[in-house]
Image (cartoon, rainbow, N blue to C red):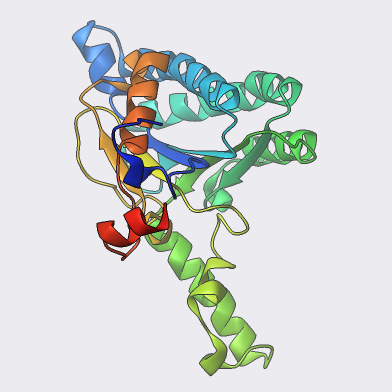
Length: 250
């Protein structure tokens, strides 16, 4: 924690990082390689960042692996991504389990093949009792979809008489979202130079700190990750209060 900004110290407890891993295709194109080569290289970058999160004793890492809009990409690329997803669910999950990491998949899984859904089920079962880092992989996920499916669940409970509409609060909504029972993200990282959140965990980003970098995801390493973490710790998180109030509370 930087010593020259004492007002940032209180409340800057970093528990949950979320990342949009952008730039795989551009990384491959710069090297005159097929886009899929960039996605494979991106998997290697993810391994490094997961290790860094474990080393820093973080509670949660949430990554945007495949959005609900990514189905619009060329069919060949989508098929190759599905193959890479299946391979990762087979090989990488064993490593996660060995390192006491719990895997969760968030998103609408109904669009995936029976094979991939089976691999997901096996992966979740293997790691469900692990007590270390929680790794959320957003696959066929969209923030608007998440809020919509939560609303449907709540509406069904109201219709069945299990919940009164006047009792619906922010907590009620949070309890029906994909990241329920987890701390909200503290730090959002997006690589690849774009500066938007692209329909990612919209509800939970309300008070998140943002870090954007031009570095393409396959080149994102532990040093750049640490720059993002250091940037987070240098900020004053006020949550609606004034800087003077925070200074007084130190």
